[in-house]
Length: 82
Ligand SMILES: [Zn+2]
Image 1 (cartoon, rainbow, N blue to C red):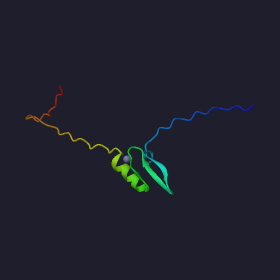
Image 2 (tube, helix red, strand yellow):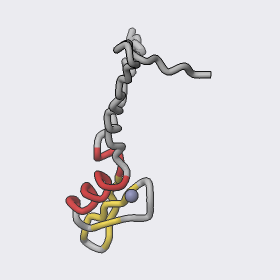
Image 3 (spheres, rainbow, N blue to C red):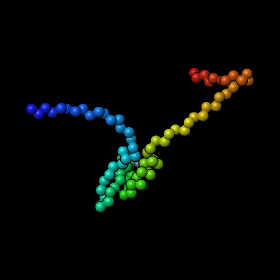
């Protein structure tokens, strides 16, 4: 008796890497790197990585600097949102 056991693969959380942003193709004898987000393609892997880094990789937002205001009694002024 040969019982097949169905093995459930654990779901792997996919982390986006730079390689998820382009696909590989062939152009003549070369490997062609195609951006999946725009029509850009290149035969040079470094170019496509640079392109993706420049154009498509979200950059971390700049931290917002909140300036704390004080009133004339040196109490912090709390902005009231309507
Ligand atoms: Zn692109």
